[in-house]
Length: 319
Image (cartoon, rainbow, N blue to C red; front, side, top):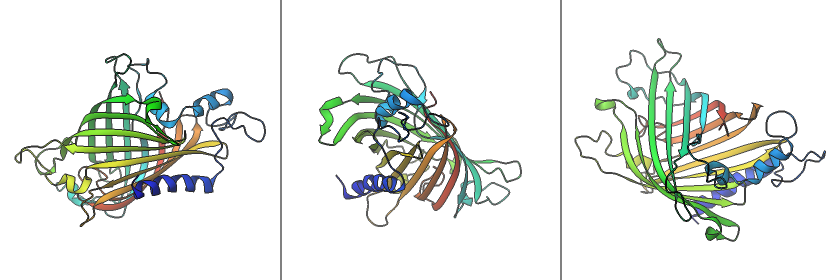
């Protein structure tokens, strides 16, 4: 495995371990309560908590143990609502705006997927469709304009691999391939869009740590219709997404990391995003903290480098 990938997985695991004790999915609390999330407050209680945590992260994400469930909306990427601050706002993202953009804004995203009732049978993949919408809202400006919105419908075939993908403590849980269209819905010089074929490989290191590898190939467009011919130079040929869950003060916390690089050496372009989320007043409502550095936090910013931090709330397991 690539040394950088090992560092991401090891860093997530070590950081979580140093911060809090991370019991096994069924380990009881010291006070005798069987729930790792506690019997009161946010999170599941009692046997329900133990049963839910006994499901690995990718099993929960794709309902791998409930493949008969179709046409049900499930979380895809994070859905969140945050306040965001960036050290370098991209004023060129909307040159027709009457005011300079503020460094602080609201950022929100909703993302969902659903398994389709096709290709049903042993050995056949699951067909999923998904949609993600990501917006940046300059609420402090006159009339409060939305600075940028990205739209991404996608469809993919996913093969659960089961025991066939096990190598010691590492398991290749799923493999897939799909297509994605992502655009900002604008015209002329402000248009940003690309279409990709995306591969998917989902690894688990035990039940609580995952690594999701997504290599992609951009579908070529004619030079007349391509508003961002160099987008691959900044957003690269794929990304790595790692996540780790642990228990802190009887609450399930999830740490996440995203790494993207153009792999072209010089100049080195890419992005790193780190996130942390935990229960907040309700079992499905989590507090959410996110940090980002690099290129491509949105499509209009694909060639714009910045550092940002966002704090807010996210919905988890809302289906």
